[in-house]
Image 1: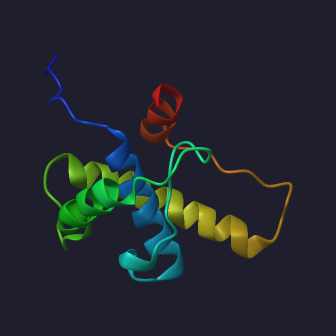
Image 2 (image 1 turned 90 degrees about the vertical axis):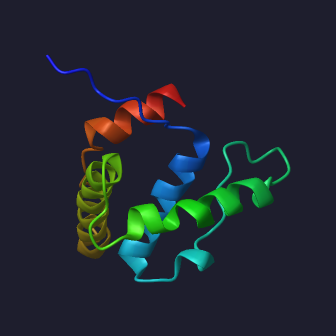
Image 3 (image 1 turned 120 degrees about the horizontal axis):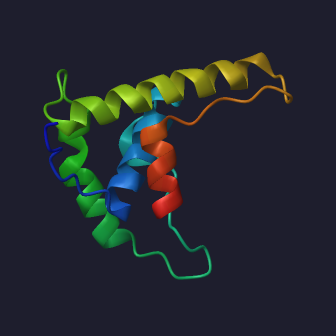
Amino acid sequence: MAKLAYVDWANEKRILASTWVWVRITSGEHLFAPPIRPDLDKPRNGRRLNSSNFSRWPLISADKPQGHWAELRNHLDNYADDLTELIDSNDSNQTIAIPLLLRHHAMTS
């Protein structure tokens, strides 16, 4: 079995993923995505996260992302499309499955 390459799933990448989903659903500009912070009781540390988000944006938004960015974006696109469909259906009893890749990260964050 091939050994998987290490992928850094730090908080900055979680924020970048959330930004990508917001952009995909709203067709908005990533610079206007709502700020996200892990602990709402702590002051916003926007400078470090925003600069990281800004510098990594081309990696996830490329026409053909490379490496793990392609897999991440594929998962995020599917999730965003399912979420869009759920929102548009206006059915409060409907649920969507969170992709395993994203679910694992949410449980370990």
